[in-house]
Image (cartoon, rainbow, N blue to C red; front, side, top):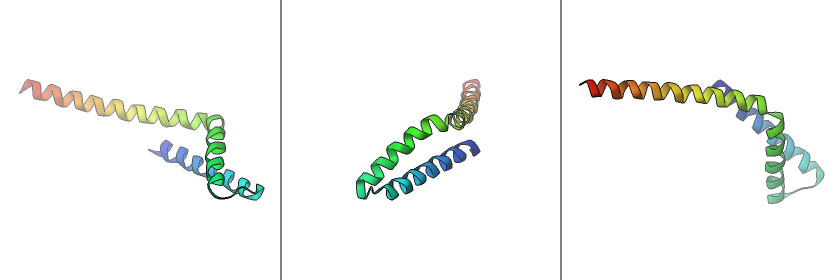
Length: 80
């Protein structure tokens, strides 16, 4: 959960930085939001790859644990 929160916080900060810089450059209204979203998305693809991998690993472990508990419950029901 911590890696997911950290990654999303960094994504938000990248968006805010892109938004601010584009605002200073003169972009306004819907164009400002669209460009900030696009620029921050491209930047995060390259800059946040390690954090994204950590988040994916953490989520994978959680899903694996959930599946193991689900399988254990299914086996317990089958025995009854």
